[in-house]
Image 1 (cartoon, rainbow, N blue to C red):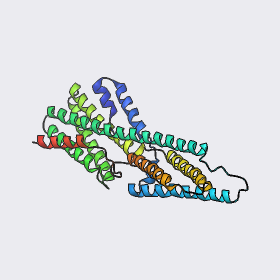
Image 2: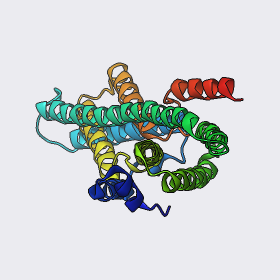
Image 3: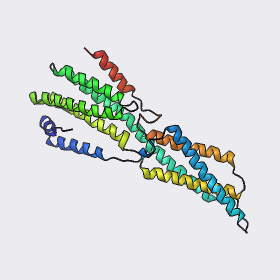
Image 4: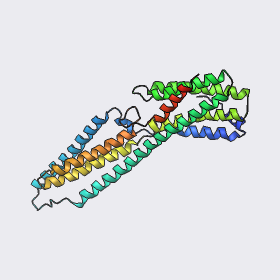
Length: 293
């Protein structure tokens, strides 16, 4: 979106403000593609697929162990070895690391919702000091902007909501730029900054929700370690001539649940079962509707 950043520098008396803000937006364009590989699967489907994958890895290890036992002329140690425990410990560490990464980014998305609500509300209240028709028009656009932001969380509406959001941002910018050129003072500078904050937090939310995902290399490592751990455990049960399903099945279900939970936390709001609360934005929408003339 073309924005005259020099205007902000002139109004604030700080030419470097435009440069700083421009650099801030530039860093948000760096996308991190990774978790999208699972987005086509529903959460239940991913859970079932993970359970099947881990069980197949365990069964493959079990068959390898039985084959090794049947072709060995020497006595084979059938007790669970320390190597199996170390691999499981590594799996638990990587899973905990990945869960912490997903949880921190989920928390960031919650903070961004609150931050966006605050900056929109600030701009809405500042518009009260504008003369007509700028006041009514800007507040109308902000009300529509909030509606679009909430509709964008519905399945299938993200792309349309993003397009509409950019259009409304351009309208807001044109309005405050016109006001600032007519009355270049500290109030108009603050209003310009509020609109810039709206644009900035939009980019932050977009980056946190759709671009800053868990890298595919981490997912590959997590599933690879899971496969190796189950292979090792299965080989031990094969050597012992028993699958020990009473111990294995709960372990498989727990690890699969945690891996699926990580994937759910990493997904955009409209694709996952765990949603970022929009209560702050909904409350703002209701307050705007009550204040509508």
